[in-house]
View (cartoon, rainbow over the protein chains, first blue to last red):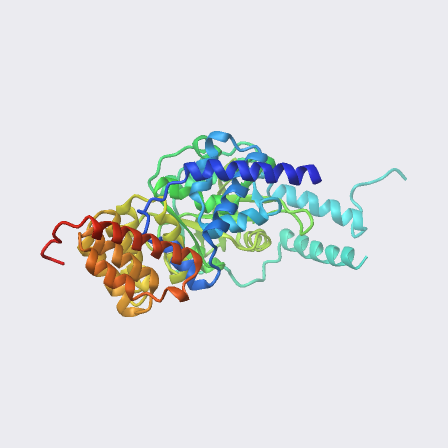
Length: 127
Length: 319
């Protein structure tokens, strides 16, 4: 656990350097982006440094979860500051849609659980 | 044990509902009776790939030709064997589209379908302790039969009763998105949610696309400063400084103390070659009241103004 923390801290620091190089603000310096003003309005404003750290952290986590290195910059660049903040906290447990399993699966699971808790008895055991 | 009982109770309810109790009032209500967006593309998903597949489906419906294979590196997370909601709503920005989260009500989904937009939803087919997340695309409704039509998984046209749909959608916290072209508003736009989507779009969007997105906001909510500021910044990026100044000034008439609008107006004046006027604007900002990021931006603007002033030739007449 400890070595994982150290490792991710190291990765985050390294990534910070890379992201700094790669990050291009689309509006010219001096112009304040509209997203910054919206966060200011809401009082959930993130300092520039914090946003940069979140960016590095999300980038490192994405890499640790198997995202191809070539796609990392593009994925991180898509995210707003508040999305970065949310992702940096919740990447492990946020819902990740992926399953095909649908109604049939649900019916089976329901039957199985009803069986297990003893409400029904359709999966016959040997007498 | 209590937990187990409660679980059994809710499971029993779910079971009864799946078996079917026909005496409920209809959930799908629409003046249109029945809608099916048959032109919506269909991409059968590969295992765990419902994120890229559904995203390609709704992007395709909004005029962006992209395959799930192209989207996979942008949204699929191998370590989670799935796709996160935040990335689902962020990726469309790379393709010039805004993902807008609609109201968590079935009526909002129906309204979007009536408006011709398929709706991407997150379903949970599992149980509270064993969630099974799945993205699908709602492409139609039938208010007579109280049904919804979905592109889902490997099914091109899956018919769902509204009750079952609601169950899976409720368990997934009722997430639903539509894709908006720049300038397009959803059926029942929420001002703050739309502006937030537009502001996140701004960073990646071509200036004209950002302009279209905020122009729609200016028209829908002319009393909202951020809408004018967003359009102003799009104008600034297109180097239309006169239009940018007009938009920032409109925002400042609404909120005279808006430091961001004032700073950007100063930058615009600098862009027009009027550093003196720019400095006047900047001096009106109360720097002590600003947060760190704003203070940095204002300091940067000031540096740029001073550089221009020290190298000044003759300012143009319109200053």
